[in-house]
Length: 213
Ligand code: URA
View (cartoon, rainbow, N blue to C red):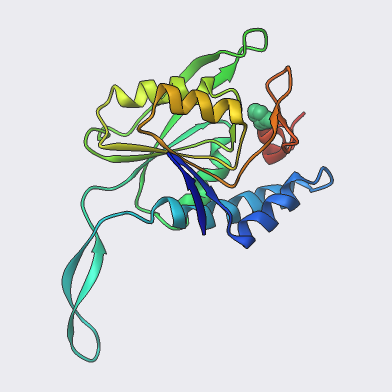
């Protein structure tokens, strides 16, 4: 189940919403948080990949020959925004294990909240492929806008962005800068605080995945 507004898709499946609530709770352990993020990402991947084209192939079951659907074309490219994107990446790879994977390292300058790139490694074939970019938190939107600019320069066929939680400010910026990029999230929260954290949110996703602080 998904609520769609323009390019924004909110995956409101009860299992996704239930697991998100458990993740928001401040007492959730690192172990539970990581496991839940993996599960939610796998469930959300089902919606994000819903429009993948298929074609029919002939196969033989133990009983007879039949025409059966197979996913078309070139392999998907998943792009994980370091470091927290890894938590979603693993969940998506559970259902698309053959995807190619790229990484972009960005950190947020604490003074300006602007994205600064420190790492960029992509598979050789991004041109003409469908790309799904992943990062748990869409906060100011500065990082994902910068990351999409970099990926677009490689000529992909399409780009989707998948996160767990979004702030209205980030959705607005990404829709303004990249109106062709569809955004998939489990929820859109109230607002950002003055340090760029999502409220009510779930805190720092990277710290909660890796048990750092
Ligand atoms: N990144 C996070 O990890 N959490 C937020 O609330 C915002 C950005």
